Amino acid sequence: MSDLRDLYQQVIMDHKKKPRNFREITDANHMAHGNNPLCGDALVVYVKLNGDVIEDISFQGSGCAISVASASLMTETLKGKTLADAEALYEDVHKALTGDKDAAELTGKLQVLAGVKEFPARVKCATLSWHTVHAAVDSDHDISVSTE
Amino acid sequence: MTQSTHNLVDTMLNDFDIAAIRRDFPILNQQINGHPLVYLDNAASSQKPVQVIDAVDQYYRLDNANVHRGVHRLSQRATDAYEAARSKVRGFLNAESDKEIIFVRGATEAINLVAQSFVRPQLQAGDEILISYLEHHANIVPWQMVCEQTGAKLKVIPMTESGELNLSGFDELLTDKTKIMAVGQVSNALGTVNSVKQMTEKAKVKGIPVLIDGAQAVPHMQVDVQDLDCDFYVFSGHKMFAPTGIGTLYGKQALLEAMPPWQGGGDMILSVSFDHTEYNTLPYKFEAGTPHIAGAVGLGAAIDYMESVGIEKIAGYEHALLELATDKLSAMDGIRIVGTAKHKASVLSFLIEDVHPHDVGTIFDQEGVAIRAGHHCAQPVMQYYGIAATARASFAFYNTEQEIDALVKAIHTTQELFA
Ligand SMILES: Cc1ncc(COP(=O)(O)O)c(C=O)c1O
Image 1 (cartoon, rainbow over the protein chains, first blue to last red):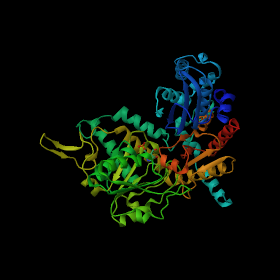
Image 2: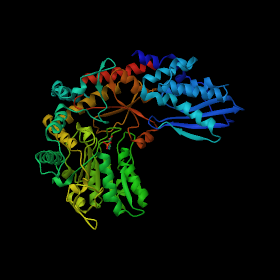
Image 3: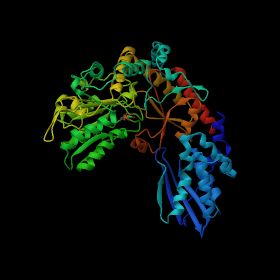
Image 4: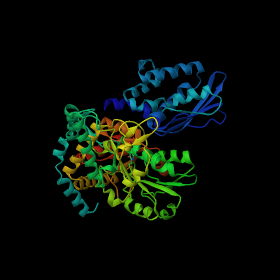
């Protein structure tokens, strides 16, 4: 049970219940749809880039607690970051969750995501929003990514 | 539940030697995350009794060889074991002849075989294939593929809020363009038992061939293909206590005779030269290549096992479990049961308010309770209800009243965690 409490610890539940930046950005210059067909998780990520700085970032959609909390944490973390910083964080999250890198290296609130590693079936839930934002900034039109 | 059904449930539950049955399923005796395993994912795949495990083991230890081709003793024994399994399946389905029993990998392969070998050659653009809203993807996609290949159209029998088929416009869906009706006997997502016999009767009056997907029916009820009068009946062994990778296509002999083979290779031929190949007779015409002999042996043993327990008894006990679980979950706050058909078998799909089914699945697993969370390969059903997924508990006759209590407890844990 302790693992589970770790996973669903306060911060994940908090972000699930009150997701941050849960809105559309009407003048976003990048967006992408992320789907996890197996679970039915479906997110849209909006990014407003100013030069190479993420001036604003948001998401909408529905999914399990882990995918929603992860998306919410992601928007909080990436707001104000440069694209290079965002890319580095994307790599860190990916590695931390797939076990290539020690989770301790995830900084701040993102550390809670490390718990998901213990639940291999749920890793895709946690990485969905990150894959989606990655696709969004890489493309200048709305694109779709899928975790399957 | 009324008092009288309550008594009936009690009687059914007490009338069953559950301890003895559970001893036959060694896998059940283990801890998951410090809790006894509560296996409620039977609709996805069932567990295997020692009788099946031993039959497969003995086959490999004593009899293993290829079938239908050796003159030596082991080949003869392997062939005998394989053909004995076919006879058991014939008896299990009450088919007329062993020639009507084709061994395949499972329900999916059987449906694809019928779609490609029986339906596709007769299809013209504008013809129709009739399925239902409740189908598993295995009984949707193969038909979409032949539609794409031929320009035929897929027609769908609608469903109701309770998860039953809406048969009010059924007669109009059976047209002179309908080249097959393919329907599930029991819905894997909701547990609805469809009135396939009446539906088949109506289709046959109009001369429309019928395939019944029995994947979720055979583990739970007596099936008689002659009584159903369907043309094809398909099921998978692994959902009825047999190994994975073995299943059955039943087809009426006259239809199978007229169908071209599906795959070519060894075993399905009588003679081959570069000018001409003579196909083998039934059922071998449809069994190209070395089959899953051990799987068939295991399937035969699973049938023996079910029959020794008694299929009527299994059905009665499982129904009592389903009633009890339905009652308990209905009494809980924040639970919505999805699929409330009058006739159901062994499946309880539900939603916990404000909790995504995948979170439910993970939390249950921490308490040793194995359920399925997802769309259950029946996305149209999910779309009908406007949901992405459900949590699904599905029962087998080795499940117990105490396991239903464990399910209820896991729901409480989930609700507390998400409170
Ligand atoms: C109703 C139904 N039909 C077909 C199938 C496909 O069975 P298999 O994957 O064993 O071929 C399933 C399996 O879930 C099912 O529930």
